[in-house]
Length: 121
Picture 1 (tube, rainbow, N blue to C red):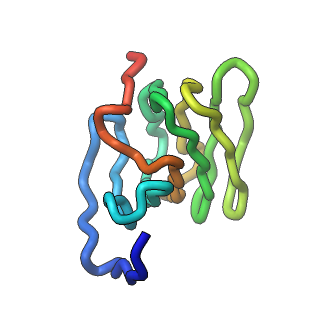
Picture 2 (tube, rainbow, N blue to C red):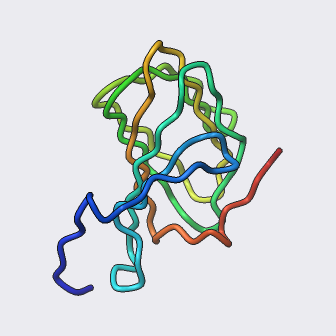
């Protein structure tokens, strides 16, 4: 890893097939151990069932309310400050249950690679 500053102004939000908008805050080969993305889910939307091959993930909820589902074991309401830990290869999705956007950071280790995303729908 190299010392660096990742500027939020340099990141661009884009819509995904997963039914959420993503900003890749930090995801590059210079820091292969972790990636950080900001996800935004509109009110009433449920993201697609998916899993990450060989990647563990954590959601850090920063705004809004939601209901997260992980595997067959977690079905929980979440809000600002809550952290959801998702084990390697575990299916997952989240629903925005509130009136405002649900916003969270998705922190992956090792870093997220698109070819490791597996749609389950």
